Length: 157
Image 1 (cartoon, rainbow, N blue to C red):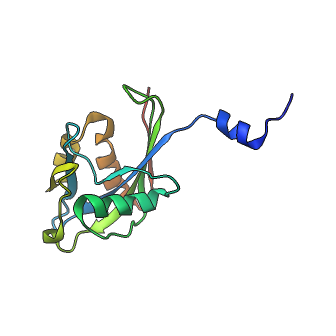
Image 2: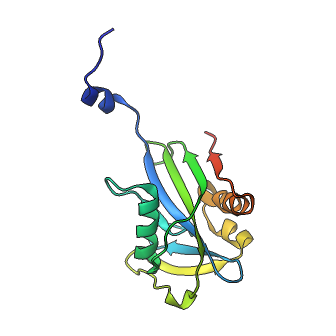
Image 3: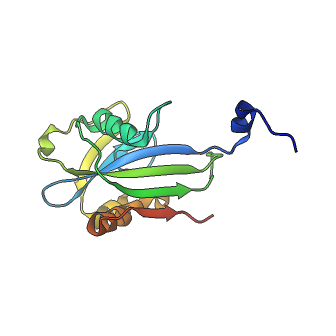
């Protein structure tokens, strides 16, 4: 068996898309969701990693871009793996970090290029506002916060 050169071997490997976001809550323990203007449903603040960016850097950048808050990501709450589906030909892994409590919600500034709104919801409401493919991240994040342990969510095919 011939060995491939490293560049050929890496080029032959399967790849995944990676996204990252944060759970941010207010003083009433409600979850901040954002409403993208380019798709239905709400989501946690976050997005796709840029080239060379780590998941925690992406989460911080996206929160700053989307809602104008400078937040240092805390512990990893959820790692979600979703198989290919629809227009997405590869699996996607989503890292959800704890962003803690927003000290002054009045400082939230919605980026209107990509978002229509940002709002705090109860944990139960937040789960119902998100698309079915990502809604399980909400109770998983709540459980992870309570247990102090990351929750791994492998989506079934």
